[in-house]
Amino acid sequence: MPVIELARHLADVAVGDLLAVVAHDPAAAVDVPAWCRMKQQDYAGADTADDGAPRYVVRRRS
Image (cartoon, rainbow, N blue to C red; front, side):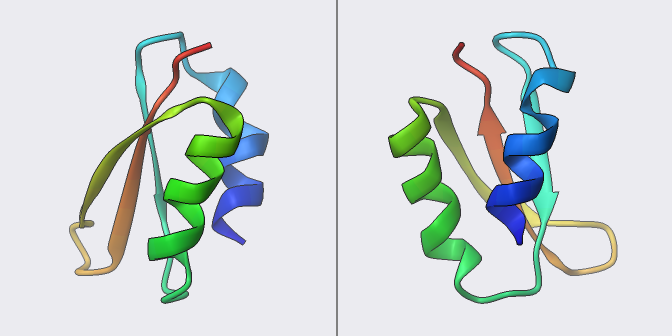
C-alpha cells in the first residue's frame, strides 16, 4: 500500500525534501493526498516514473 510505504520511509528524508512512491493502485490518487492532509505533510503532486508507472510526490513538513 502506498501510504504504508510513505509512512515507513518519511523519516528517511530531511524536512523539506521530497519523497516519491510509485503505485499501480488507482486508489493511490486519492489515498496519498488524503494521507498527506491527515499527517500534515505536503502533497507535491503526481507524475510518471521512468517506466510509465504513476508516481506520487510528498514534501516532508515535519
